Image (cartoon, rainbow, N blue to C red; front, side, top):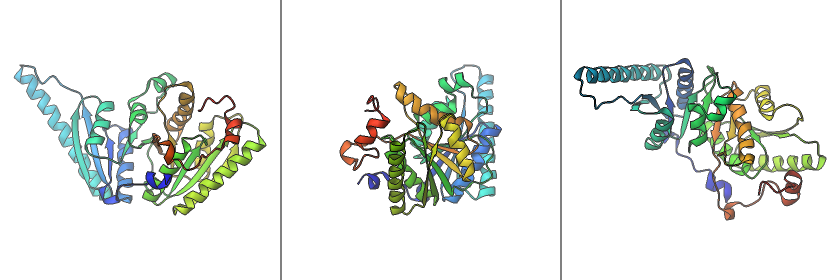
Length: 317
Protein backbone atom coordinates (compact mmCIF):
# COMPACT_ATOMS: atom_id res chain seq x y z
CA UNK A 1 0.00 0.00 0.00
CA UNK A 2 1.07 3.55 -0.72
CA UNK A 3 1.24 4.85 2.82
CA UNK A 4 3.00 1.81 4.26
CA UNK A 5 5.75 2.14 1.65
CA UNK A 6 6.37 5.75 2.63
CA UNK A 7 6.31 5.39 6.39
CA UNK A 8 9.60 3.56 6.97
CA UNK A 9 11.73 5.58 9.40
CA UNK A 10 14.85 4.94 11.40
CA UNK A 11 14.56 4.00 15.04
CA UNK A 12 15.02 7.04 17.34
CA UNK A 13 18.29 5.63 18.69
CA UNK A 14 19.69 5.67 15.14
CA UNK A 15 18.55 9.18 14.24
CA UNK A 16 21.05 11.92 13.47
CA UNK A 17 20.29 15.60 13.05
CA UNK A 18 22.84 17.76 11.26
CA UNK A 19 23.14 21.42 12.19
CA UNK A 20 25.67 23.81 10.66
CA UNK A 21 27.10 26.72 12.60
CA UNK A 22 29.09 29.81 11.67
CA UNK A 23 28.94 30.90 15.36
CA UNK A 24 26.59 33.79 14.43
CA UNK A 25 23.24 34.34 16.25
CA UNK A 26 21.00 32.69 13.62
CA UNK A 27 23.08 29.52 13.58
CA UNK A 28 23.23 29.45 17.38
CA UNK A 29 19.41 29.66 17.49
CA UNK A 30 19.31 26.72 15.08
CA UNK A 31 21.83 24.79 17.19
CA UNK A 32 19.87 25.33 20.41
CA UNK A 33 16.67 24.24 18.67
CA UNK A 34 18.30 21.19 17.07
CA UNK A 35 19.80 20.15 20.41
CA UNK A 36 16.45 20.39 22.18
CA UNK A 37 14.71 18.55 19.36
CA UNK A 38 17.38 15.84 19.32
CA UNK A 39 16.94 15.39 23.05
CA UNK A 40 13.16 15.05 22.69
CA UNK A 41 13.48 12.19 20.16
CA UNK A 42 16.70 10.66 21.53
CA UNK A 43 18.73 11.55 18.43
CA UNK A 44 22.41 12.35 17.99
CA UNK A 45 23.52 15.77 16.84
CA UNK A 46 26.11 16.36 14.14
CA UNK A 47 27.59 19.84 14.60
CA UNK A 48 29.22 21.05 11.39
CA UNK A 49 31.37 24.07 10.68
CA UNK A 50 32.60 24.76 7.17
CA UNK A 51 35.66 26.96 6.77
CA UNK A 52 37.06 28.37 3.57
CA UNK A 53 39.57 26.37 1.58
CA UNK A 54 43.06 27.68 2.17
CA UNK A 55 45.87 27.14 -0.31
CA UNK A 56 47.77 24.45 1.54
CA UNK A 57 50.15 24.19 -1.41
CA UNK A 58 51.94 27.40 -0.51
CA UNK A 59 55.67 27.02 0.11
CA UNK A 60 55.82 29.68 2.81
CA UNK A 61 56.15 27.87 6.17
CA UNK A 62 54.90 30.91 8.05
CA UNK A 63 51.67 30.92 6.00
CA UNK A 64 51.22 27.18 6.49
CA UNK A 65 51.59 27.61 10.26
CA UNK A 66 49.05 30.42 10.14
CA UNK A 67 46.54 28.19 8.31
CA UNK A 68 47.09 25.36 10.79
CA UNK A 69 46.64 27.74 13.69
CA UNK A 70 43.32 29.01 12.30
CA UNK A 71 42.11 25.46 11.71
CA UNK A 72 43.04 24.31 15.23
CA UNK A 73 41.33 27.33 16.81
CA UNK A 74 38.16 26.60 14.86
CA UNK A 75 38.30 22.96 15.95
CA UNK A 76 38.68 24.01 19.61
CA UNK A 77 35.82 26.50 19.28
CA UNK A 78 33.58 23.86 17.73
CA UNK A 79 34.41 21.29 20.41
CA UNK A 80 33.79 23.83 23.16
CA UNK A 81 30.38 24.63 21.68
CA UNK A 82 29.58 20.91 21.53
CA UNK A 83 30.53 20.52 25.22
CA UNK A 84 28.25 23.41 26.17
CA UNK A 85 25.33 21.88 24.27
CA UNK A 86 25.89 18.41 25.74
CA UNK A 87 25.92 19.80 29.29
CA UNK A 88 22.80 21.90 28.68
CA UNK A 89 20.65 19.37 26.81
CA UNK A 90 22.28 16.00 27.50
CA UNK A 91 22.50 15.44 23.75
CA UNK A 92 25.35 13.45 22.19
CA UNK A 93 27.19 15.79 19.79
CA UNK A 94 29.54 14.75 17.00
CA UNK A 95 31.68 17.62 15.67
CA UNK A 96 32.73 17.86 12.03
CA UNK A 97 35.04 20.54 10.63
CA UNK A 98 35.24 20.73 6.84
CA UNK A 99 36.82 22.99 4.23
CA UNK A 100 34.83 24.18 1.22
CA UNK A 101 31.53 25.83 0.28
CA UNK A 102 28.80 25.45 2.87
CA UNK A 103 26.02 24.80 0.35
CA UNK A 104 28.06 21.90 -1.04
CA UNK A 105 29.40 20.51 2.22
CA UNK A 106 26.12 20.32 4.15
CA UNK A 107 24.48 17.86 1.70
CA UNK A 108 27.76 15.95 1.39
CA UNK A 109 28.27 15.60 5.14
CA UNK A 110 24.60 14.78 5.76
CA UNK A 111 24.85 11.92 3.25
CA UNK A 112 28.18 10.67 4.62
CA UNK A 113 26.98 10.77 8.24
CA UNK A 114 23.55 9.35 7.31
CA UNK A 115 21.66 12.24 8.88
CA UNK A 116 17.88 12.05 8.95
CA UNK A 117 17.35 15.81 8.80
CA UNK A 118 19.13 19.18 8.69
CA UNK A 119 18.46 22.21 10.89
CA UNK A 120 19.58 25.64 9.69
CA UNK A 121 19.22 29.26 10.77
CA UNK A 122 18.32 31.79 8.10
CA UNK A 123 19.17 35.44 7.77
CA UNK A 124 16.54 38.14 8.14
CA UNK A 125 17.71 40.02 5.02
CA UNK A 126 16.26 37.90 2.23
CA UNK A 127 14.89 40.35 -0.35
CA UNK A 128 13.25 39.24 -3.61
CA UNK A 129 16.46 39.17 -5.62
CA UNK A 130 18.33 37.06 -3.07
CA UNK A 131 15.31 34.76 -2.64
CA UNK A 132 15.16 34.02 -6.36
CA UNK A 133 18.91 33.53 -6.68
CA UNK A 134 19.05 31.57 -3.45
CA UNK A 135 20.94 32.14 -0.22
CA UNK A 136 22.94 29.26 1.24
CA UNK A 137 19.94 28.23 3.31
CA UNK A 138 17.47 28.31 0.44
CA UNK A 139 19.89 26.56 -1.88
CA UNK A 140 20.11 23.69 0.60
CA UNK A 141 16.33 23.63 1.13
CA UNK A 142 15.83 23.33 -2.61
CA UNK A 143 18.46 20.67 -3.24
CA UNK A 144 18.48 18.55 -0.07
CA UNK A 145 17.32 14.96 -0.34
CA UNK A 146 16.47 14.89 3.38
CA UNK A 147 14.14 17.21 5.32
CA UNK A 148 15.43 20.65 6.30
CA UNK A 149 14.11 22.64 9.26
CA UNK A 150 14.74 26.38 8.97
CA UNK A 151 14.81 28.67 12.00
CA UNK A 152 14.28 32.41 11.72
CA UNK A 153 14.73 33.42 15.36
CA UNK A 154 15.22 31.98 18.83
CA UNK A 155 12.60 29.31 19.58
CA UNK A 156 11.79 28.72 23.22
CA UNK A 157 9.83 25.49 22.75
CA UNK A 158 12.09 22.78 21.35
CA UNK A 159 9.59 19.91 21.24
CA UNK A 160 7.17 19.45 18.34
CA UNK A 161 3.71 18.53 19.58
CA UNK A 162 1.56 20.17 16.89
CA UNK A 163 2.40 20.36 13.18
CA UNK A 164 0.58 22.44 10.58
CA UNK A 165 0.30 20.79 7.19
CA UNK A 166 -0.88 23.18 4.42
CA UNK A 167 -2.15 21.25 1.40
CA UNK A 168 -2.92 22.47 -2.10
CA UNK A 169 -4.56 19.10 -2.87
CA UNK A 170 -2.57 18.45 -6.04
CA UNK A 171 -1.05 15.01 -6.68
CA UNK A 172 2.05 15.96 -4.67
CA UNK A 173 -0.11 16.18 -1.55
CA UNK A 174 -0.15 12.40 -1.36
CA UNK A 175 3.54 12.29 -0.58
CA UNK A 176 3.19 15.22 1.79
CA UNK A 177 0.43 13.49 3.77
CA UNK A 178 2.51 10.33 4.05
CA UNK A 179 5.54 12.30 5.24
CA UNK A 180 3.38 14.19 7.75
CA UNK A 181 2.24 10.88 9.24
CA UNK A 182 5.84 9.70 9.36
CA UNK A 183 7.13 12.74 11.24
CA UNK A 184 4.05 13.06 13.44
CA UNK A 185 4.86 9.56 14.60
CA UNK A 186 8.49 10.45 15.21
CA UNK A 187 7.68 13.61 17.16
CA UNK A 188 4.54 12.15 18.79
CA UNK A 189 2.68 15.18 17.45
CA UNK A 190 -0.83 15.94 16.26
CA UNK A 191 -1.49 17.50 12.85
CA UNK A 192 -3.55 20.47 11.75
CA UNK A 193 -4.30 20.16 8.03
CA UNK A 194 -5.12 23.40 6.23
CA UNK A 195 -6.33 23.93 2.68
CA UNK A 196 -6.80 27.43 1.28
CA UNK A 197 -9.57 27.89 -1.28
CA UNK A 198 -8.70 30.86 -3.49
CA UNK A 199 -11.71 30.73 -5.83
CA UNK A 200 -15.38 30.91 -4.93
CA UNK A 201 -16.80 27.59 -6.08
CA UNK A 202 -19.30 25.57 -4.06
CA UNK A 203 -18.63 22.28 -5.89
CA UNK A 204 -14.88 22.65 -5.41
CA UNK A 205 -15.40 23.48 -1.73
CA UNK A 206 -17.44 20.29 -1.23
CA UNK A 207 -14.79 18.17 -2.91
CA UNK A 208 -12.02 19.79 -0.85
CA UNK A 209 -13.99 18.99 2.29
CA UNK A 210 -14.46 15.38 1.15
CA UNK A 211 -10.76 15.05 0.45
CA UNK A 212 -9.78 16.47 3.82
CA UNK A 213 -12.17 14.05 5.53
CA UNK A 214 -10.38 11.18 3.73
CA UNK A 215 -7.01 12.52 4.86
CA UNK A 216 -8.23 12.82 8.46
CA UNK A 217 -9.48 9.23 8.37
CA UNK A 218 -6.14 7.97 6.99
CA UNK A 219 -4.18 9.82 9.65
CA UNK A 220 -6.42 8.51 12.41
CA UNK A 221 -5.94 4.98 11.09
CA UNK A 222 -2.18 5.52 11.50
CA UNK A 223 -2.60 6.69 15.08
CA UNK A 224 -2.18 10.40 14.37
CA UNK A 225 -4.61 12.90 15.85
CA UNK A 226 -5.73 15.24 13.10
CA UNK A 227 -7.92 18.32 12.64
CA UNK A 228 -8.75 19.76 9.22
CA UNK A 229 -9.66 23.26 8.10
CA UNK A 230 -10.62 25.00 4.86
CA UNK A 231 -10.13 28.76 4.66
CA UNK A 232 -11.69 30.73 1.81
CA UNK A 233 -9.37 33.62 1.02
CA UNK A 234 -9.42 35.55 -2.24
CA UNK A 235 -7.09 38.45 -1.51
CA UNK A 236 -4.31 37.58 0.94
CA UNK A 237 -1.24 35.65 -0.12
CA UNK A 238 -1.45 31.95 0.69
CA UNK A 239 1.79 32.15 2.66
CA UNK A 240 0.31 34.81 4.95
CA UNK A 241 -2.86 32.78 5.46
CA UNK A 242 -0.79 29.74 6.45
CA UNK A 243 1.50 31.55 8.88
CA UNK A 244 -1.44 33.39 10.48
CA UNK A 245 -3.34 30.14 10.96
CA UNK A 246 -0.27 28.44 12.40
CA UNK A 247 -0.13 31.10 15.09
CA UNK A 248 -3.90 30.86 15.70
CA UNK A 249 -3.71 27.12 16.46
CA UNK A 250 -0.41 27.37 18.40
CA UNK A 251 1.47 25.11 16.00
CA UNK A 252 5.08 24.27 16.80
CA UNK A 253 6.14 23.71 13.21
CA UNK A 254 4.91 24.18 9.63
CA UNK A 255 5.59 21.45 7.09
CA UNK A 256 5.89 22.39 3.41
CA UNK A 257 6.69 20.54 0.21
CA UNK A 258 9.36 22.06 -1.99
CA UNK A 259 9.73 21.37 -5.70
CA UNK A 260 12.43 21.73 -8.29
CA UNK A 261 11.62 24.80 -10.34
CA UNK A 262 11.70 23.42 -13.87
CA UNK A 263 8.58 25.11 -15.21
CA UNK A 264 6.14 27.85 -14.28
CA UNK A 265 3.69 25.62 -12.44
CA UNK A 266 6.37 24.18 -10.18
CA UNK A 267 7.90 27.61 -9.56
CA UNK A 268 4.50 28.98 -8.55
CA UNK A 269 3.87 26.18 -6.05
CA UNK A 270 7.43 26.53 -4.82
CA UNK A 271 7.03 30.26 -4.33
CA UNK A 272 4.26 29.64 -1.76
CA UNK A 273 6.57 27.34 0.17
CA UNK A 274 9.40 29.87 -0.01
CA UNK A 275 7.04 32.59 1.22
CA UNK A 276 6.31 30.50 4.30
CA UNK A 277 9.99 29.69 4.85
CA UNK A 278 10.93 33.35 4.54
CA UNK A 279 8.20 34.87 6.70
CA UNK A 280 7.30 32.30 9.35
CA UNK A 281 8.40 32.93 12.93
CA UNK A 282 7.88 29.22 13.53
CA UNK A 283 10.30 26.49 12.42
CA UNK A 284 9.50 25.26 8.90
CA UNK A 285 10.11 21.66 7.85
CA UNK A 286 10.76 21.44 4.08
CA UNK A 287 10.55 18.13 2.25
CA UNK A 288 11.04 17.27 -1.41
CA UNK A 289 8.23 14.99 -2.61
CA UNK A 290 9.12 11.42 -3.42
CA UNK A 291 8.41 10.23 -6.94
CA UNK A 292 6.15 7.18 -6.75
CA UNK A 293 5.50 4.58 -9.46
CA UNK A 294 1.96 4.88 -10.79
CA UNK A 295 0.99 1.41 -9.52
CA UNK A 296 1.82 2.45 -5.94
CA UNK A 297 -0.81 5.20 -6.01
CA UNK A 298 -3.98 3.54 -4.75
CA UNK A 299 -6.36 6.49 -5.09
CA UNK A 300 -6.13 10.00 -6.47
CA UNK A 301 -6.73 12.73 -3.90
CA UNK A 302 -8.61 14.66 -6.57
CA UNK A 303 -10.82 12.60 -8.86
CA UNK A 304 -11.32 13.35 -12.53
CA UNK A 305 -14.46 15.43 -12.03
CA UNK A 306 -12.72 17.70 -9.54
CA UNK A 307 -9.60 17.93 -11.73
CA UNK A 308 -11.78 19.44 -14.44
CA UNK A 309 -12.59 22.30 -12.06
CA UNK A 310 -9.15 22.63 -10.51
CA UNK A 311 -7.22 22.28 -13.76
CA UNK A 312 -9.49 23.02 -16.74
CA UNK A 313 -6.51 23.49 -19.08
CA UNK A 314 -4.93 20.21 -17.93
CA UNK A 315 -1.62 21.95 -17.18
CA UNK A 316 -0.95 19.77 -14.12
CA UNK A 317 -1.01 16.53 -16.10
